[in-house]
Image 1 (spheres, one colour):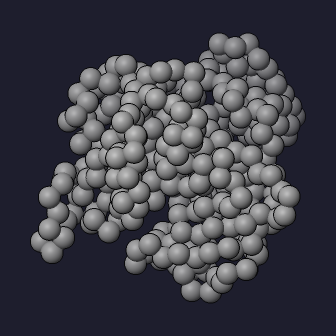
Image 2 (cartoon, helix red, strand yellow; image 1 turned 180 degrees about the horizontal axis):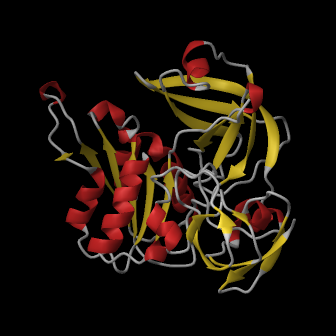
Length: 341
């Protein structure tokens, strides 16, 4: 059975098909709602049901707790309507003209930048143009219907190759392949671009970037895109890792700071060892940002990395530093969920 879904405050509406999630139906109908992982883990698509009822699907408990359901909240990537609905959600218009596609690519290079991080460069077919917004991601398509999501580290104006920052995960379906058997010239297929984590260019607000680990990849894309377009908004990057080697492209970030007056870089280490001889900032990366910016009222924040960091940054920035809810943008690197056999 199909149901009508009306988006407030825009008043736009669309119809869902049988067992179709609100997010999938909206995207099929040409309306873009905020989303990230699409598997019920990151909470980027969380929104409110104003009227009507839904089946909440199978969200991870940390992404949608029971009291939020009672308050009318749901994850649009998981929820399917049981009646006609009125929902409250921010619509995003910027991605509408970019088509999500499936493409083959050839492994151009495999460069290990630390013990557990590889940078892959994938070459597209000749004369193929792949459009995306800085900060978006692709799904690498594996056997058995498995997918693994990776943000693109290259900016859109450098689209001859797709750059992926891959951290080795124990028993990972894709990372085991990358670190053990993948070779140059191998073929990988992917779908994209995906996601709504990208720079909002309609404002001049200063930007606070907060990254952990390979969450640096999409932020790198956004920063290099900003430099290319001549965006002169003040920008500061806080990049956190356990040890200095986790900040695997810190030389590049330091060079940005030398070359661009509107950009600064603050590396933060949480678990340094004496042999690291670390003399920089210590502790949780989002706390370092709060120490420097106790008042974020007139800023935007872009946060990417492990879910715990992203969630803490969102909560603390908005509750303690006055960051407006609609000025926080995030991409949490949540574990992939494979299709059931």
